[in-house]
Length: 230
Image (cartoon, rainbow, N blue to C red; front, top):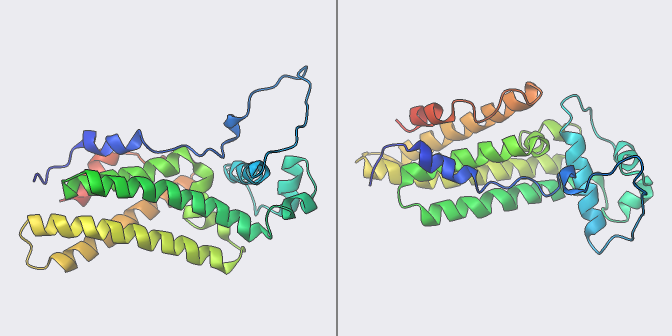
């Protein structure tokens, strides 16, 4: 097994990172002369439209707390129409968090099962999270908790659990790295390395949000990962 970090291996994860299907770009473009016809949504389609609208609003760097009134206005429906599909706004945010979890952990588990080199596992996992956040700015605001301020406390708990789960995956890979390097304290080394990796990820995502999505999370990614894997 090689401990050397490979930029090519890390970037391989990037091509598999999904952009959110909740993106507004999924809709065909219209022109002022295009007649607008409203069709009855298929089962589940209206829920997706609501989540897509919420994700779109979250992508505005200057966005304040998004209320159901703002969301309903964006969709050109009544607030009552929103509550026919979601019991609360917290449930809408839970839908976004579920998408983040499914997207990240499906690919993360594939990385760990298919990549035999634990050092490359770490590199790919880091690239995965940063690329996902970069492609989905609205989701990034949820991941760092910025979009959850003044929302229901259970949302922050669930996001914290997401990060705990990511740290656990990173700890597994770092433990294998420490074992391969002959560490006398591989468990301790893995805990410290995984904690540092999560701090790195959170810092990059926080900076991305606070810069109005100008400072990209993947900035100097290869060099940064090399430093973390020393």
